[in-house]
Image 1 (cartoon, rainbow, N blue to C red):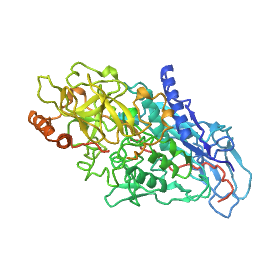
Image 2: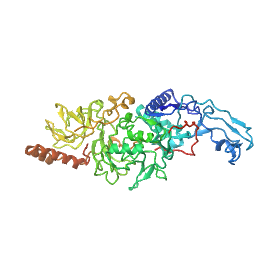
Image 3: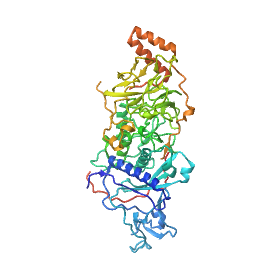
Length: 579
């Protein structure tokens, strides 16, 4: 019996795929290969010993099956279906060389058979076979927001998926602003679906908590999903609960991970995480800016709890969203007033990772809750090319080491006496865990105590210093600092201080429809703050924080059995709905 080893995923482009240009094919396969490499570094399996062969569906090639259990040929085909042509998965034709043979047994008691199709050669050195089909399908055309969708095709005797089909909408390859990183993350998202993170597979998950190896001496979890007292469907499995408790800093015994309610089927199940609670996860339903998506510990924990994989949780990427916020985080009833991760109604600020300026918006998956989403254009503080005229008044600096800070700074000699509270870009450098300095145009480096506010000489107003967001997670950096996604998978988590489709996010408006925050720091408030500074520094800080809370409502806080044979099982008719 062999120990689990990194899963070998073989991608296969069907011969009937529409002809792609050389550029499209290169873009497709480069992204698929990179995604496969990343997933293989995260998941290990007991490898298939021989070439991988998939089963034919007896209900397709056979018109009559011997069902008398006392016969020699029980459950074998007695009469062929003359209309049988091929096997398919999600509309993709599976090559005969990938399939086991099939035969007809004309008599229930005689072993004599007639071969209908010979056994294929199989696919060597493969644990999972991914059929990649690029086409403008009816589904792609009917729902323009869909980038890709997928389904598993067959499973082995333990329930582990052996093959899956992924449909890439043709338009995705040439979509404006759709980068290589977007494509890689889309493929990873769909791979996670077909490998186990799917409402079609939840009921097949195995409990291997008492086993020394994934897939050995395991038993069915039973039902891993349930509805909590608030009507939220959650995924309850041991590792998921543990990681949720760790992430939210809660000891709640039944803290399952919530599933998305907006794309749930009639059974209430979804194949995505609830966006309000696990925003930024690779398994949320919306595709956002690549630097804001994380292959998070809770998703990796879910794959561990399938019972089919041994996972490397240390290679998961830190998820900042909701960290330490408690078990009620993200509920519809509390999102407006219980957490700095959410905002109210409208206004300008910073995305919670502070790489981008943002606007307070909602989308179809947030149930009316609002969060700061990156502005449509030139929102990245880390892009020096985003600097524009008129920045001198607020002292902004764009560059690879710049981050977004909530501020209402304006030059003392500005004609305008007050400035709106909004997100601004300033340089930063880490001096410790959750400790950093910032630099404004024409200023020295200044300590910015996390959770407090500071003033800058030559400017009026404040800069607010976010807590537990900056200089906290070693694997968080904008793309200019990220060479390969694989590099990200090494650091893993934030450091605690000792002190069924992926969609494009269409909620970010066109810049011409941007509304500036209707709330500003008035001249009177600035004067009051100045007076308070004379009385005491503490009072100044309190006043500044009060303005911040008032204006944005989004303050920052921080057994030893024989090895089972790999007998492929054909899943029931299905078409997993992706996003």
